Length: 365
Image (tube, rainbow, N blue to C red; front, side, top):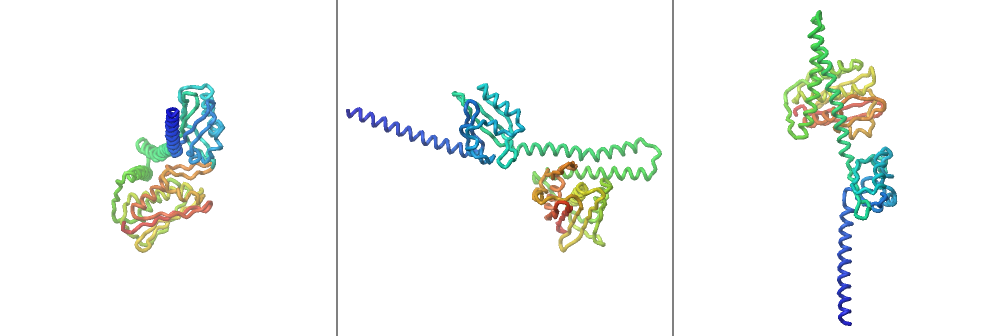
């Protein structure tokens, strides 16, 4: 009898330890799963969700309880009809091979989130899987694609002009010296624009690697403004450019190439967003130990919701029903070049009232 009691006590102790170890194991598992950045889920053999970790709410804003008891495919973005059919077909066929797809979901705030969904079956046929948020990766890919397209267009425009006028000079006979001079001037201006664009792209690349060094020199910024305005005027002949500068020229210590980049991009930006027959006012002057460039247009203006992002690389303001050419790098370059000189850029704008960009730089960078 005593032996049976001892055996029973021993079995009870073993069972107790097993329960303790199992409980600790479950707690560790729960802590691990609930702390994951990726969504982890379990579903029935037919794809109905029975468990999902807190990352679901963290990434998409939907409560975990809302998805329990529903088909995962019901939560795909309505545009993902193909992925939804594929998911349901995989569940219905009880396939052993894993299922995977990059799928759009709509968050609780109606924002699109891209998720890589992966799922497979366990020995009993139940489904378990994960979802990884790749929204930022997709955004970068889309930006790169838009950038390549925009840069190709921006490069093609001056190249077409250069090739066209060069061909005319080589083949045409009877051109007057004045005509030849004009064609050569256009070729020179378009070559300068092409050089400026390439320099800007290279500058941003160098900035990423911290290898940009200013080539400082004493220069007259009014002369640079006159050159930039002449080039912008030739590209946008229906826009009037007014310049307001001190009567006497003044000298600054700066990198001429990057000051020209600032001027080119501010003028091009103002011209592109101005109304037809509009006016751009450019003011340049000195204030103590600083000098400034101010470019103001009477165009469509910039809504305040875009002000914080306007200087981001590749950021382009959506324009309903209108395609505005450009790479989305111009204002980013302006800010980077100003910062390199120890300067700053400010924006004053509202919808329908145009925009005024002001760049303030030290006279001795």
